[in-house]
Amino acid sequence: MTIILPITLSACAAAALVNLWLAVRIGQLRGKQKVLHGDDGGGPLTRRMRAQLNFVENTPFVLLLVAGIELAGRGGTWLSAVVGVYLLARVAHAIGMDSDKPHKARMVGVLVTMLTLIGLAVYAALIAAGIV
Image (cartoon, rainbow, N blue to C red; front, side):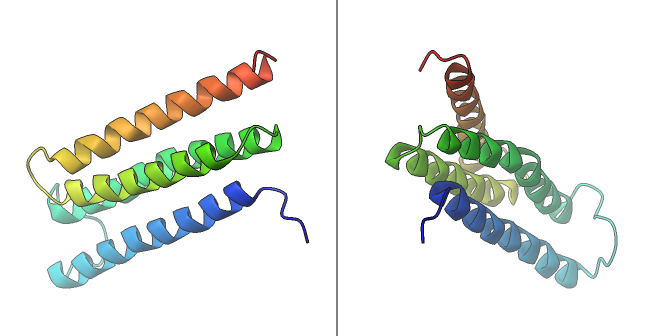
């Protein structure tokens, strides 16, 4: 059996697990703070919710770009590494969001996310244009 998009499939599975971890962290804090609905007005629960939403806002674009690059036959070990670094950065971002002050982990997560999106988007555009 041949898997057509092994990097994309692995990336989607890993992203689903990270998203689940983010959701569990929110649920744990909801229970601790006894907040059933909504948020806590900008406190720790809101920050955890924003960390998950930020993940959900960015990750589909990364996964679509990975799939497109892989479908174009331009994937490889480097693409797996990019996905791995991206997901680790998203975990770092979530941990950094637990702080009410600027945190290095959050900044690293944001920077890696932006660089990943820019890098993959430019590479995908170059493939589409027939340049690479």
